[in-house]
Image (tube, rainbow, N blue to C red):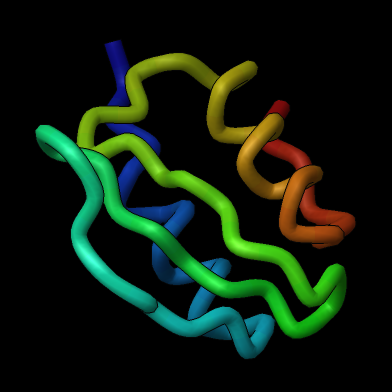
Length: 65
């Protein structure tokens, strides 16, 4: 099973999203300037679908296939 967490964080950085703080457990909070909202990012994103949900919440058009 592929790990998408590192790729998702790289895409967030490339699109101007910023790390805000550590959340509970292995979750982190990121701020998206596109949607002007905070988004929770899991530290262990193992599914393509969850990776796409995070990117969609941030307003980023990129999708894993």
